Structures are given as C-alpha cells and as structure tokens.
Image (cartoon, rainbow, N blue to C red; front, side, top):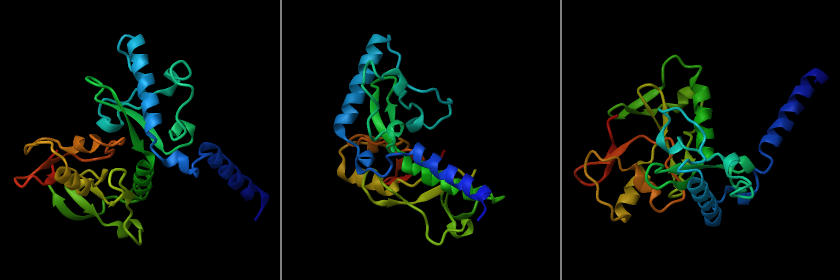
Length: 233
C-alpha cells in the first residue's frame, strides 16, 4: 500500500482517538447519581443568579422534547461546576446531559448517545434507498423495518437504558427512525401507580424513576386495557 493511502488512514485513526479518548473506560458509561446531583445543583445556582435563565444550548423549535435542551457546560464550568462529569460527552463519555420540564421544574437527565449513534448508522444506509424499506404496518403511520434491504444480516437493536432489555426500531411514513419503547412502557405501567387516560402521552412515565429520558421516541398512549399503544401523530 502506497504512503499516500496510508497517511489519510492514520490521520482518521488519530482523529477518532482524539474525539473519544476515554470511550472505553467503564466509568464513562455509568450514570452516577452524585454526578447528576452536582450538575443539578450547578444548574439551580446558575438559574437563581441569572434571573431564571438556564444554561442550555439553542435548538430548533421542532426538536423532539427529550433532546431539545442539552446543558451548555461552558455556562456553568468553572463557576458552578469544576468540570463536566466524566461520563458526559464533553469529557469523552457516552451521555448527553439534558434538561426536562424547563418551564416548571428544570430537571437534569441523561440521553444515551449510543442510541443516537445506532440511529445515525441506520440513516446512513437509508440514504441509498429511494423509498423507505417498510416491512409491516403495526399502527397508524408506524411501520416495522425490513432491515435485510439495508444490508443487515440481523436486526439492529439498542439496550434500553431503563430495563436493559433489547429494543428494536420502527419507522414512520416519512422514513424517520424511532426507538420502540413499548415493552418498557408496558413494564412501567404494570409496576407504577400513575393513572392515565386514552389520549394521554404516557412516555413521560419512563423518566419518573430513572436518570434517563426516552430519546427518539414516538408518542404512546393506553388502550381500554391500560396497555401501551402507539398514539396517532
């Protein structure tokens, strides 16, 4: 192999190593409660001293709610926090720190960026297809995906940050990819005491006793048997 081909390859490897220098460290993949608490305290102090302003990055209005308010650590480090947590993306970890309930009770939560990476991988394969590879209609405007048409020998999945179960992906009529949280919701409804009615978006139940948010989720509601179903968008 000639030098002109080797050098770009080495550069790519070096750059990838610089971008994620600590990605293999186990501690950067664990959602530590004390780190969440320290960030929450810093956010609260910042908000108090800045007249209600939150340290968040700007996102488009139509950005899905659970990834809409990522924390801007440049606003709270070092005055309110010595450094971003080791498990944050900013420090080489796999989690994005975000805020939910920003209008009423700004609360720090986590997005597992490995989910975003898997969705990005699928979308790259989709780009070479003129039409989305729908498999079956499983609800109104919700489809399973024929992953064999995307070159997968086995269907991709992600590990749920809530249950540690394997979760699959679904697609809407426009070809957008979503994580299917229906099994997690079924378990949460079974174990929880919250009361919902048909038409309520029940996805928020997953955030109640977890440091995570259900990123890249469709809206879900309940049927007459109090079981989760996809909600028409």
